[in-house]
Image 1 (spheres, helix red, strand yellow):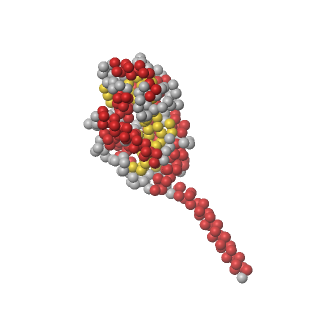
Image 2: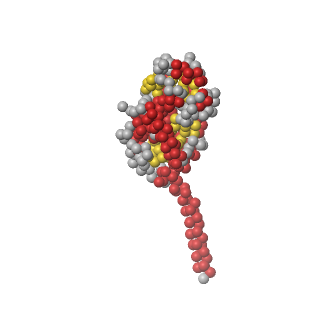
Image 3: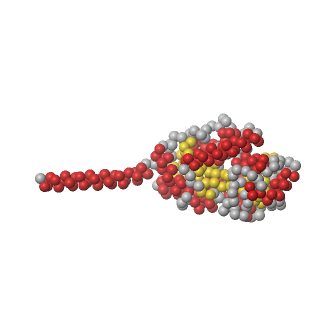
Length: 327
């Protein structure tokens, strides 16, 4: 009887130990359930662009935490909308996208026939990073509030550049014009920020709103002048005032990048991304993002959705009041 009781106690002990081990292993097994193969991050802009740099800053960290390669693929075209559409239609559960403001906010306002619907075709993951736009001009133009006085006195002879109709640089500049006394300046679209910079230096245009990662090196080199920021003062440009300080009262407008997946993204993927992406942004990737001109945020999905709703309202007001549309 004693031997039988001892065997029963041993079986009970082994069973209890096995259950405890399974409980401890549960989270680890859940974490490794996704991804099961390499992850693709699509970016709708060329290599070396600010969205591309943000995606690559994050990919290296995520590859370590996922235990799978994370590959950034550039699919430029249509202000990022081609890549965004490919993400929306992906079905492999391992395709994500790093998108910009316009892809989730103004794109459908400008083009109701857009191939995807930002409100329903994506799984929102995280607002990755933001940056105030820098209003830049040629070095020989006035600084501060005098810049806007000169703009109003130009009698419509000024022009400004952007990377395309409906881009945040275009819509933002129309917003600045309206809030700074409705000065006249003709919009000239270019095929990229390097072309905008060349046009300013060459005297073809007098202003542009640009991401700090692109604008500030040119300011430091003396090729451009920084007039002001569309948001509060930033550690990236501590000597540059906000436009509000110069008397241009406007809601803060920033350029930003976010991570999204298709609406079909699995629950396991969403759970893993919700944990790993903010941790990467606020951890190992933070300095790489800053070096690329981005202020890390790393919000949850709800934070990204709130930002999209707020900015869609602001940009929608600009689009309607200025009569902007994509031909």
